[in-house]
Amino acid sequence: MRRLLVIVGATAALAAPAATAAAKPSNADKREAQKECRAERGTTDATREAFKAKYRNFGACVSEKAREAKAERKSAKRNAARDCREERGDTAESREAFRAKYGTNENKSNAFGKCVSQKAKAKRAAQDAEDAEQAEERTNAAEACDAERGETAETRKAFEDKYGTNGNKKNAFGKCVSQKAKDSGDQ
Image (cartoon, rainbow, N blue to C red; front, side, top):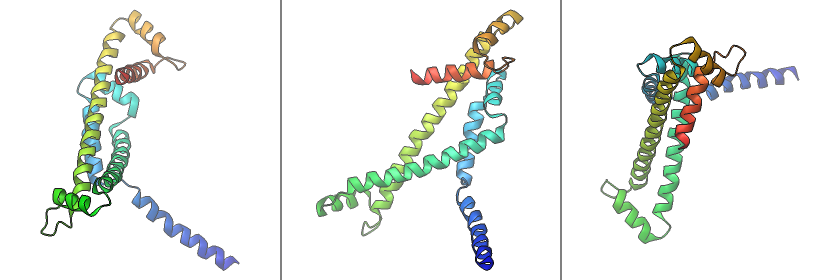
């Protein structure tokens, strides 16, 4: 019985690293994440403060965005394959038209792969545009919150009272940015 437990334990230990290795984002996902994080971080004090309030640091942002990029890439490819299967159809005529439209080699046998590639690229481009729009919304929200916060102690106190939710109300700026970004995204 003990020998069986050792074998089962060793097998489980060997399987765990393989599962975690497969879950890592690719280098392309990380590069895309870095680009998004730089855009969201911005160049002004207000955008950098909002960035820090949301992510703590650049590495945390890259990790989160890289995981999102991987999920987006997998989703785009899965949805593209489904769309291509639908477009290809079931009849001989529809399959021949599909091969003529997407196939690039001499016998047009690469049509399905080319279709998936084109559709996945288009879906990823749309997702990247949406991510850029969200980063722009957060940047604009940070600038608006910085202006609303003002310079005087009186306006800062009013700002903290309005947006702060924790005991010392020091989370007011991050809460303001989050609320304004969400409001602009809903519209």
